[in-house]
Amino acid sequence: MMMQIVTPILRQSPRLCHGGVGAVVDVVSSNFTSPSISSSSIHHEHSKQLLRAYSSSSPSSSSAAAVAHTLLILGKPGGGKGTISSKILSDFPQFKHVSTGDELRQHVRNGTELGLQAKKFMDEGLLVPDEVMIKMVFATTQSASATGQSLLLDGFPRTLSQAQSLDNTLTINHVINLCIPNEIIVERISDRWIHPASGRVYSYSYRPPKVHGIDDETGEQLVQRDDDKPASVMRRLEKYEEATRPLVDYYRDKGVLQTFKGTMSDVIYVDVKRWLEEKLAGDDDEEDEKEMKG
Image (cartoon, rainbow, N blue to C red; front, top):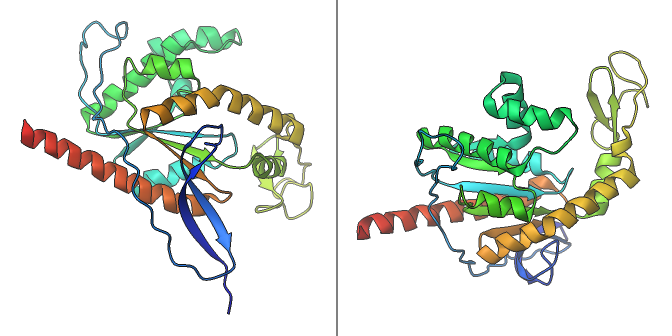
């Protein structure tokens, strides 16, 4: 009997989502039984993270303790980045999730010095400057380093200039680049409808309302945000790719980036988990070797 299987394949691709040549993990469906395809490990340069005090962050802190690992996750809006991040945090509890958007809003709510700086720009409808964002990431890094936590960065850096600036403060050890076809993302997001008053979200493909177009609890009409309409989603994806292409190339050239291609987060994550386990083990072995030589 022929059964459908899913086989992860590591291959050399002419494109890394945004172009260029690099290692890509594809998830391929086939209608025949096939043995697992093994591939030689791709060796990336490993570096133990050293944090240097950001020159204007705090006069009393001239250095910071090393954080075990710093992982960055990149992915298109609606491309499963949140799902993959949640799975990583569940399977690798040593990581602290740093969502820069959430961190920024927390600083603003708490009225911290960084929050007040950021609020000035936010109130004027301006982007928060990279310098303020980097200070915020560094403050979080200091807190994590005190407890020996690793970091999972989500949402920053978003551009090449941000990545280059962040390099003065923080070493990114590994980068996960999620590459989901645009048409799949457009289909997912444009399928989303909300109840404005409560914020309840429905999807006709996996969480439909009991009555078409009606909120389950109030009986009120559901609406689709303008940002969730297909044309708007495609524009956002195009802008993301334009901004992120140089960032992907930057980390690929550093030898720390791995791209995972597919359409289903649960399937993609199997390969993400295996890859991350290998990388973290390699980093630890390298550090042990350094200590023995020292």
